[in-house]
Length: 197
Ligand SMILES: Cc1cc2nc3c(=O)[nH]c(=O)nc-3n(C[C@H](O)[C@H](O)[C@H](O)COP(=O)(O)O)c2cc1C
Figure 1 (tube, protein in one colour):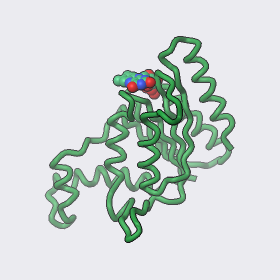
Figure 2 (tube, protein in one colour; figure 1 turned 180 degrees about the horizontal axis):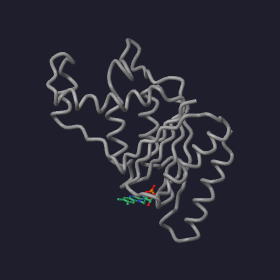
Figure 3 (cartoon, helix red, strand yellow; figure 1 turned 90 degrees about the vertical axis):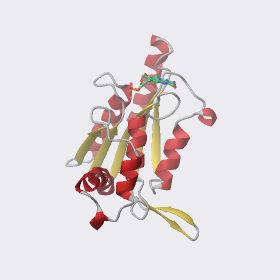
């Protein structure tokens, strides 16, 4: 089993999304001895955001790219290869300003490549990153009802679009609502991890 862990908090050891994602990975490893784990920490090592130069590089045929353009595309290629090779993807996703961190959005921007990870067919888009299990550990200061969660639907839509439709979300919520609420939120996340099959 190949496990890919994507961390996107800008915090180090104090990150709650990373703590929960680590626990998911530990549980998977315990159930699958010999599983290989690749960790990409987008907070510590951010992937470059899309800009005009990056788009220009992507839309230039490979054989016509400058060395600089080839190097830029290679950065995205590495992320795509990692996710293609993964059987399980574990994402740590803090909520920043009601959405995902820009670091995680930059990851999605890098791996969403037409003809490689998705394609358009006569019946609509088709995700090509198939047969993967995804866990998303979300951490947030507040508490959002499922029908008014500003972050999760966007992440789920991206995962589904790319073919990763088997996703489980784990919530660590209420972290900025006082020590009792924070402890409850963390305990609920821990219970959700413990209950994973
Ligand atoms: C820049 C920033 C923006 C945040 N925006 C929100 C927000 O919009 N809603 C919310 O509920 N919590 C928000 N929080 C609280 C974080 O979601 C919370 O601290 C969470 O633990 C962050 O994940 P991490 O511990 O993995 O870094 C924000 C925190 C930071 C640092």
